[in-house]
Image (cartoon, rainbow, N blue to C red):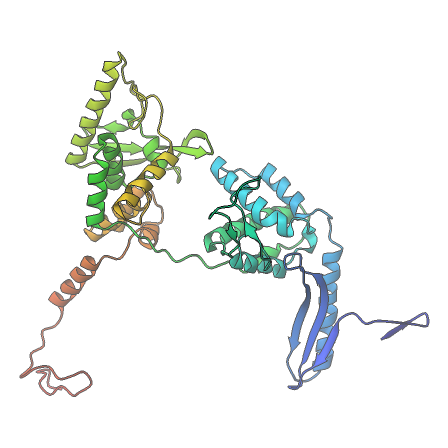
Length: 435
């Protein structure tokens, strides 16, 4: 206790001597805004010369850090920072919508009211830990999840809450939002240090692509071909590895039938019920060669489109869409409709896959056929010389592994034994190497 004007003042922080001769320093830092529990700044001082003095210096240092957070340069909250950041940052519309969704669901309800200057790495790590436990932030509360917030008769869709963790990829998006906004706060002079730099984000999810097998791909195409227009879309996606938005935005002027080339440079994005045209995901213009069978399939598709248009005294302009529900191909198909229709198709066949897996299929089959990763990366629109392609879009193929084993065996040294090779671990007396 320190004495001030005849009164005793309680010492801030606690120093505890350990059996090892070291010391544990603990300073109360307030209530965790995520877990609502008190938390402390802690340090351990190893035993040795002047351990007690070093512990006292560490206590003083922790108190200084705490006082700096309690008296920041600004009283602005995380909510106010996020509002300001969203005004400033340049984001693609769908990316912005995804960010706003994460902010409203996971950041504002948990740390939104915390002052930016008082936000620290421990609080951020606590938020990530909570998201790994439950994406609904239930804090262990038991309640019933109803199918709607309005008055209704409960059915099987209304059930007790069961904790489901937020995926590592989504937590990394939350981490990216906090990192970007707090980086701006440092630039603006709101804070001196970005606390996210000391926080630990989730590890990058291990790529685990699951493309359909050759037999499953054949079943999918044959089922899709019951509607020739739909079959052409599925086939072309499989042959080019194009994304659903790129398929929706493909126009007839992008097809060079004599040259057997398709150019992918635009994409259709869907945000709720609205659609708009934009660059491809990587802002690249890709020219992909087409095989002769695919060219003939596209010619037949064009003939069907022209026949339907002519029946209504319409014509198909050069900038018309390749895949359209309108007679003159003037409107694009919805990307979400492509995903939903493909999902219904594969569900009928009993195959667990999704439309984007056709992209995996294209990359995997090309690599299994011996095409170099750089060429495959060019077709998919990846940078990095093929490293992204190999890491994310090529699944393991047993036949490729078998060919690798046979190729290695064909080049291996020839060993001749006088009799059957001895079991592993026994001395081989029959090697002609003289050993």
